[in-house]
Amino acid sequence: MIKLASLSKHFGGTVVLDGVDLTIEKGEIVVIIGPSGTGKSTLLRCINFLEQPTSGTMTVGGLTLDVNRATRKDILAVRQQTAFVFQNYALFANKTGLQNIAERLLVVDKWPKEKAYQRAREILDQIGLADKADAYPASMSGGQQQRIGIGRAMAANAEAILFDEPTSSLDPEWVEEVLGLMKKLASERQTMIVVTHEMAFARDVADRVIFIDGGRIVEQGPPSQIFHSPKDPRTKDFLKKILTTNPV
Ligand code: ADP
Ligand code: MG
Image (cartoon, rainbow, N blue to C red):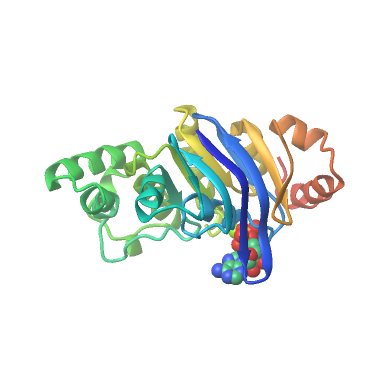
């Protein structure tokens, strides 16, 4: 349901994504790992057109487009099908928990207020933050703010949710509650693409782990294969380092 073919992204003369081919099935949970600065965030951002890819084609939710010929309407249609969860939550500081989740339904989807708030309350229930409906982000813990961030993505009702290191700016004490919510979504077969270094999460939840280096997919496979019998020396080297600091 998401298919990238020869997707590339250049910043000036720097090639950050170098012809990525990737197909993600509906309901699949994919974890992306790789060294810092290798294009993981750029890949997610290109899928959502937060960055304009330089070349390639993209199929999202039944719409296939050449990224260079995409009209504004195409881009909006593709963007509707993917929701983004940012490392730093990106909540509206001047909106409550309820308003943060309802915002997209009101502004993008143009739902009437009552319906939008009703849906936002359902989501607050699902993310275990019904009691934070009227609280502002500043009064919430990092874990609670990120759960609201995920609630916002859930409200988008998109085909896939893209997570860019959703727990890496959290104090350790809040990591588990965010991973717990992500596991719940995974058990409901919400399609997810997750950039993370939480290796235990990858092992337990991912259908597929993709190792990226130098803007290319070096290796991919089920977590058991990637963790226990990586083929490429770069994957081996990366895992040796990361598993020392993030053991599974
Ligand atoms: P990762 O998420 O794997 O750490 P990124 O996708 O953030 O890597 O970045 C990959 C490379 O692209 C880095 O070298 C980074 O400096 C570069 N880059 C990312 N965004 C921009 C930008 N807006 N302008 C110029 N270079 C960028
Ligand atoms: Mg990144």
